[in-house]
Structures are given as structure tokens and as C-alpha cells.
View: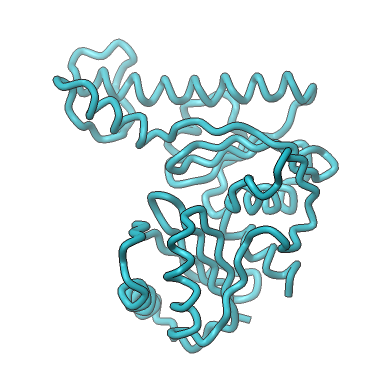
Length: 255
């Protein structure tokens, strides 16, 4: 079985190709909602060529999407270029996980996918931190129940807001500064963003642990997970492919 998994975020779309349980390839591209179906189709086909894979080898497709207009592009794309009707993660799909949210339909598909993957791989009593356009914190109980969580502005959003709203501050590269007591403006911004965000993560995780009255394992995923995790005290494991793995798992539960 060759499975194509697509995780559409607000900033980036991550694409993975599985052969059974093995992730053969993964790619990260920008999410552009005003691209046409054929523009995305040709992009994915070209990515396949770089991985020396034929698009005809795809047996099935599953999509997680938090940008609704993108589904109007991807669903017909899958049928035209791969001759497959994709499985969409959303209401009515089988996850095997009870969702204790006031309105389960409001929970982002990516958060549920992460929760399913986290529980399958690491067991219960778990906090999953996903560093995306927004940073999400989700708690999974020891019994495998999705209990909810919180959402904060992502690192890139926060950095861009600082650049746009403070006229004398430049746009800076997100990287580890030499010192917290920085000696120039760029380093000062880098220190504030890096250590401020690490403190945000540790603070939220500490409060979630206190409310849950337990000591859950903390898993980080997302594009910037590795960079931030090394500056925190709370993150135990970095699993950058967690969402792609979760899509594969949910596909198997439904097929």
C-alpha cells in the first residue's frame, strides 16, 4: 500500500508518502489558497519526480486541513492527478479517541491527528505542543481521551507583529542568540523571541500539569519544534513527523 498524506496548515503544507508503515519521503511547501488545482497538481507531481516515485503508485490519500478553501483545490486535484477520492479528516471520521470538547467540530483537524498519533506512539497522559502558525497545546489523558488544550500565537506571527508594529525594529532571522543580555538590536530581538517563547511553553505546560494533577510526557512537533525544544525545560521528545504518522494511523482506522 502506498499512501499519500497531506497536512495543510495556515503557512505550510506538509506532504508525506508512506509505503506501509515506512515514511519514504516528506516535503514542505507554502500554503497558497489562490493557487489553481493544476498549479498544486504539477507541484506535487514534480516533487514525486525528485523522489523518483511515480504518481501512479499512489493507492490512497488522506488530508488534514485547517484552511477550508484549500479543500476545493485538493479534492479535485486528487481525483484528476491520482484518480483517488481522498479521505478528509473531519466530523464523522473514525479516530478511536473520545473528544471531550464543548463542540468537537471546533477542534482543528491537525490537533486531533496529533493526539491520535501521540497516544498510539507514546501512550496516555500526554501533552503535545505543535509549533505551527499558531502554537497549540493539547492534553491526552492516560485513558486515551482528548481533553482539550490551548492556543497561542506562533513564533513567526509574534516576530512579524514586532517588525510591523515597531518602526525602528528590523525583521530578524529566528536563531539562537549568543546571550540573553544582548549588545545589539538584532540580538536583543532574537533573545526576546527565543527565550520569551521558551518561557511561554514552559509556563503553559506547568499550568496544564497542575490542572491535570499529573506529570504527563511532553511531545513537541512542527517546523520549529527542534529549535525551541532545546531551550525549554518541559519538552521531553521532539517528533517532527508526528502529524504525518497520525494521518497514516487514522487512515488505517477508516479503511
